[in-house]
Length: 566
Image (cartoon, rainbow, N blue to C red; front, top):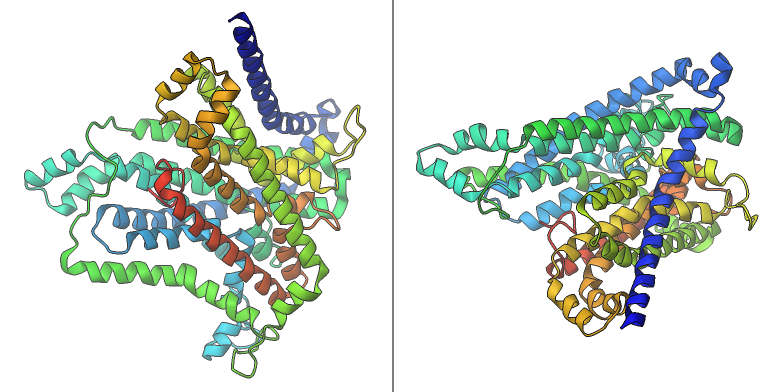
């Protein structure tokens, strides 16, 4: 008996050591960034922080970031709120497919979103030229502007508003709505006097998430803003790093700290406002209320489908058309249609195979390692006091909550010198990108497992414990088989996010270590838009296929694990 207790104590210490190491992995890059940003303050006006704060380019980029992120947030609130209210509360048909299609832009990489819209508009658009409605040659590209950046930021982040608001709407007690209806309230009165005030916190949370996501977005401002000379904070950091390399790391750390403080201020404001807007609700919830639209239903469905056609189908169609023509500006006809771009990218371009291999190795390796870490970590978290659970999860969320460019600069600072003892240099290797992915996406894999463990009947494990099974044996024999769907779902989500990632890898890649996201960005920047379109089409097909695979797992997963399923 004593040996069993001793063995159990050793296993618990191992769990605790694993937890401490993971928390350190999450926090150390941010702490290193903070130390570098505040370095040399004794120099006064010569310190990196002072130079950044007194630079005109910093404040111009800050204003651009706030302006485009605010406009993007407002558009996201409009789109996400409309779809959330109509799909969740009314009797429109085809809800699962409407939700799936509306969520797809969030999973498509920002650089692909930007590329697809660039192929949809302007005088060189193959789709518009095929339809005979392209603007005259020499006309400006309308998306190369602050308005174009804000438009795509809003479309990209609208699903975040949809998710936050839909969660609030599904928590509305049915008894409350039914009582109002019995009392003679019209549907308009129920919406205006009950539903909107009660779900205000969901709108605030969604708006804050959209703003923070837009603030840290790199792909859209880079592809639309850099050609027009319109820089936001992430693209300012990218251009300075590309021009001056590690010689400006201290200044880039100060800029990154500025973005991080803005993001954290947005999170704090969101928590404060949502706390003041929260209502205590009692009653049955969890399913749509299905307000009858009557004769308006067909029209409402047509509006939703039309909006999806504009924000999703048309840009993707333009992307496909652009990948099938020999050059930009050439209309698609039976004579011009060609698969040459796909043959070039898949058969002749060695960089494509290298980038695809790198992305698959990085995304697949990160997914597998995080799946292996998430189960013991979630298992140990569940046994901590609730306060420590919250603090640990908050620490793990830091790399994901901060903009990706901030994490990239932090990782460069941390690993630009050889690692102590082993004297191995990660800077300029795939290993650095891999470490950044582990820190950034851990919480994505962990949360589905934590949610599933919270719903597990504890009596199963208690019976095994009484039979003498230790923690590792219980974990392998009982917990793992039951948690396998949640682990697999978390792994696919990590793979989806990592395989096309650009915001982090844009600053961490080097020659020979390109990823798919970086390659698409570089091809478009180098004027190879047709080749970039062909590669982007393959990426969209991969994303859609993985999302459909996750749909097949929905029946075995807790609600909330798959973002577009409720």
